[in-house]
Length: 236
Image 1 (cartoon, rainbow, N blue to C red):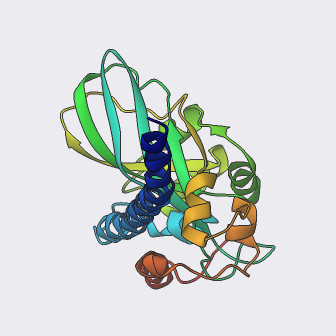
Image 2: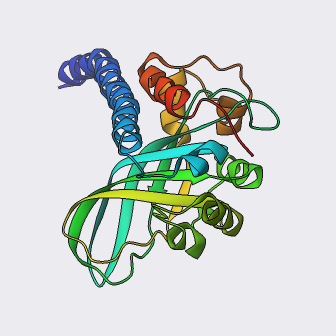
Image 3: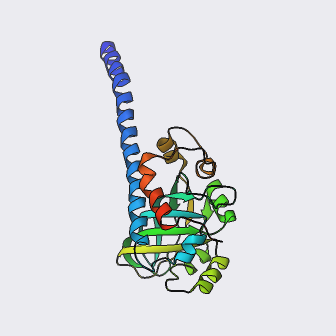
């Protein structure tokens, strides 16, 4: 019996590290897929004429993308999603787009609801205060994030009014049956565990996004190139 236990212990010492490596490789693949999915969603949304007013895009300090946010409920519901956030470089947020931080969206109520859906979300962070708050901790989305959603077809002056009323503007592309969408009560935060896998070491989200010293992951190349092409310059 003792020999059997020793044998099993030896096997576990060999097998467990291998299983850990397989799990880590699998998670890294999922992280890379998330970065590529975010690029695809962003490109598809930005390629639709007048979907998000260019004036607002030009004024955004940061962009957050959540592909396939899952929502379900009957009158009361919640949300769960994983995405990325990237900001313009420089102290004044006027430079080129930088390396992204992995992000998580959780919880919240979506108002009157019937059915369920997967929704692609694009959030525009319109000022420095909102950007730094999100990068530092968990931030609860308020009524402004939902009330300002989807101001398609507004003129420049109306776009400016929207920008002044909210730190975060939200746009969604839904697939499925749903009545009523609101982000109020949901929270967004940096996904530090996934950042560690993507970048190979523990780096604060603020340093990833704002320092300008973090190397862009290969899987994020299309995301940043899309932003550089569609929103090349920041306009106050």
